[in-house]
Length: 225
Image 1: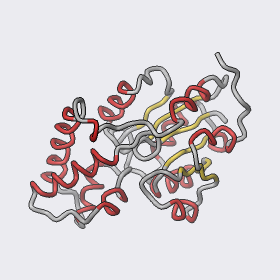
Image 2: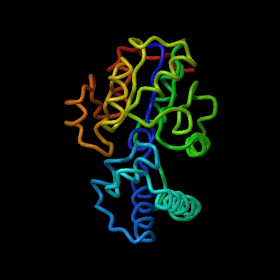
Image 3: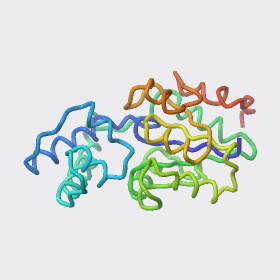
Image 4: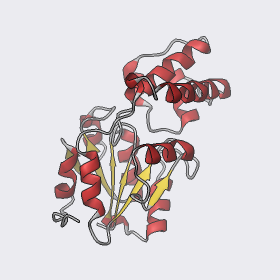
C-alpha cells in the first residue's frame, strides 16, 4: 500500500456523546425536534451544514441551525476538559495500530473527515498525532463526502496510486467516497452506521477490531522501532 486514509468520528475516535449532545441542544435552541439517536449518528461524516440540513429534513442548509450547533459544540469541547462524559477517546487498538503502520517504510497515512480543518487539527493535537499523518483533508478542503475529492487530494499530495490506497471508515459516505475514487474501501464494525449497509455499498474488508487492519491489507508485521 502507498496510502491508508482514515475517517475520524466513529472510526478512530468515539465522539458519539459530544456530537449527539450538541445536536440535541442546537435543535432545542432553534425550536426544532431532534429525530433521535440513529438519525443523529447517520449524518456524521457529512460536512456540517449539509449534515444539519439533512438531520432537520431541510432541502437547503440553515445558517442559523449550523452556527448554533457550531457554538454549542465549541462550548461542549471546553466543558469536556473537566467532564469525562464528553470526552472523545480513541477506540481500542487505534494508538498501537497507527504506530505500527507508521513504521512501514514508504507507507503514508492520511485523514479524510467531515470536520473543519480546525476541528481536525484539534483532534490531531489532542491525541499527540503531530507528524503521524502525511495528509489531512477536511470539510474546508474539498466537497462533502461522498464526493471523492478528499481522497483525490490526498493521493495527489502523497503520490499514491488508487489501487494502492485504502479508505477506512464507519459510514456509507466513507465507503461511497472510496468506491468513487477507485480505492480499497475498508469498513469498521464499531462505528455509527450498520456494517451490513457498508458491505452492500462495496466495502472490501470489514474490521472487527482495529488491529486487524494491517493483515486485511496484506501488510507484513512492521519491525518495532
